[in-house]
Amino acid sequence: MLAFDYRRPLVIEDALSLKKEWGVSSSLLMGGTDLFLAIDEGARSPEMLIDLKNIKELKTLEEKEGYVIIGAGTTYSELIDSELIHSTLPGIWESSRLVASMGVRNAATLVGNICNAVPSAESAAPLLVRDAMVHLSSLKENRIIPINDFFTGPRKTVLQSDEILTKVAVPLVMGEFGESYVKLGRYRGEDIAQVGVSVFVDSDFNYKIAYCAVGPVPMRIPKAEDLLRGKDISPELIEKAQAAILDTVSPIADIRASREYRIHMCRIMFEKAVGAAVSRMKTSQPEYGIRLI
Image 1 (cartoon, one colour):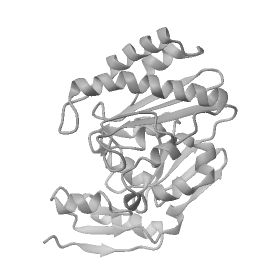
Image 2 (spheres, rainbow, N blue to C red):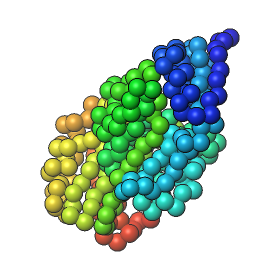
Image 3 (cartoon, one colour):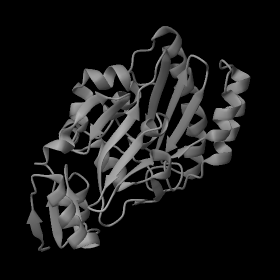
Image 4 (cartoon, rainbow, N blue to C red):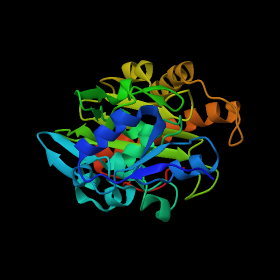
């Protein structure tokens, strides 16, 4: 049986002091939905468990100075129930509804999801297409990093051993826009993504496209974005963008899907996602939350 010390600080400064003292020997606890499984499987063996659930400043969910601020303690269920998220970040709202089960969503957090940094991280693609900024704190400094620079490899990020990711700031978009998140899983409600794709488009037809589960890290697809920029979609343009996507992604075969199946679904899911995003920008239909595959 694993034995470890446990602390439950009330303010972020105390948590940062513990993180500095224990470094890589510590683990942070918020939702715990992945952490406890990793401990049970022997993948994680912390000597110090730092429970962040009582730190009020990490539970922020608000609009502030042109950003939507999502604190590290905000659960998926809180995102789903938030009118602010539904109205300003509908792609994140849509993806949050597809995370695991209701029981998991009641505990799991968006920040915890991206800190785990698995290639299939459910929230990564929706954050990537909205140019989110992650806020990292240590006792010596605070850093703000673009989400696109956050992931460095499977289960690896730019987070240092003495840092805590305290919040994610997502810039608000002025004017009309549409977005979508499409997830492929083996069955509804419980499975992690075999492939996930997010698409964002504004009224000037600027596109942002991101995938998860088809490479070592969640990724934007700049070649496809450049091809589509300034243009309404057409079958010919979609086909060219699909080719650019397949030039960028590098899926593997695993227990959940073959490489060939993931490549095939990258094409199909992009067509569904970009069509929905453009239609939502123009007509507000289909409604967010409708399964597109």
